[in-house]
Image 1 (cartoon, rainbow, N blue to C red):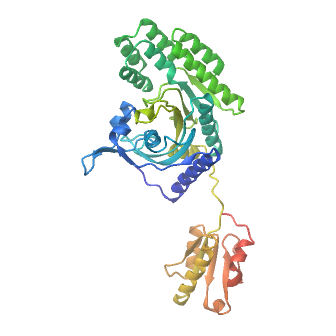
Image 2: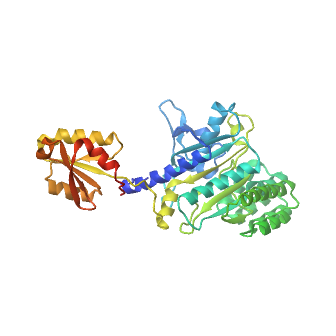
Image 3: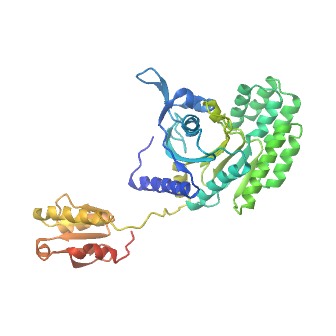
Length: 425
C-alpha cells in the first residue's frame, strides 16, 4: 500500500475526474458501495485466485467479512436487492479503492484504485460494443497513445467444455489454468475430467488461434470449433460486437485471442483487456456476465462492464509523458506586515475565496522578502502584501510573481483586478 504525495495525488484525482466526466457523457449514474462486504458475496464466482487473496476476517459480531477485491459483485448485489424494478437498461459508474493480498511486485499493489462502468439489462451486441467504445474513449481522453485491446469470448471455451459434459466446477479450474497460461495443465485436466480427444485437440488449436487480422482470425476460430454449436455461436456473437464497433467509426488496434480466459468465474461472453506498449500488464479489463445478478437472488439479468485501473492509467501516462490537463488557476498568498495586519489578511483571504480564488495566508511570521521567497517555492502566482501605510488608504500591494512586477490597488477593486486578467499556472 502506498502514500501519494501532492503531485501524485493530483494526477490520480485528475484521472479519476476524467472517468467521472466520461460517465456523465455516456449517462452512467454514480453509486457508492461499501468497502467491507460479506465474504460469501465477494467470494461467489470471483475465482480461486481472488478468493485466496482477499483480506477476510471475522468482525466483532462473528460475521465473516472481507475488503472488496473488485466492484462487480457489489454492483450485482445492489441490483438484485435495491434496483431490480428500475427500468432497463441501467447504467452505473463507481470509483474507489480495492484490496487484494498480492505478492508485492511491479504493477501489483495490495491497495489499488479502479473506475467501473456497468451496463445492466441488455444482452444485445450493442451493449458490449458500447463498453468497448467507452473504454477506447477513456484512453483517448487521457491522452494515451498506441493502445490496443486484447479481445476474446468466454463462450468459445465454455461452449467446448459444456458440450463435453464437464462439470462447471471443473470448467472453472480449467479456465483458471488458462488465465494463468498453464495451457498444458489445462489440457491435461480436460482429459482427466472426461473430455474427448476431439475436445483437447480443439482446445489446443483454439489456444493457438490469435492475431490482429480480425476477420481472418474469427473465421479460423469458427472453423476450429465447428463441432461445437455453442462455441460457434460465441464466435458469431463476438463478430457482431466487433462489426458494430468498426461501423461506429471507432478505430483502435485489436488482438483477437480465441482462447482468452479471464480469471473471474462470472464471465459468460465477450472479454477484453486494454494495454499500452510501455506497461507489461493490462490497464483494465471487462466483459459480459449474464448470470451473476440472479446468483444474488435477482431475476435473470444480462450485464456487461469494465474496470479501469486508475493507478495503472496514471503510470501509463507517466511513461508516455502525457501532460495532465489540470485547470490553470491563480494561486494567491496574502502576506501581513506585522501582527496588526493579521486579521485584515484573514479577511482579504476570505473575500477572495468567496469568488473561488485559492488563497493561503502567511502564518509563520516571515519578513516580506522571506515570504516572497517562500511563495516562489510554492508556485504562488500572486501575492498580496498588507501593510499599515497602504491599508490606511484602503489599499494593498498586488504582486505578480511571474512577471516580477507589482502595483498598489484599492481593496474595493481587488477582486476586479483578478477578474480582468487571465492567469495560468
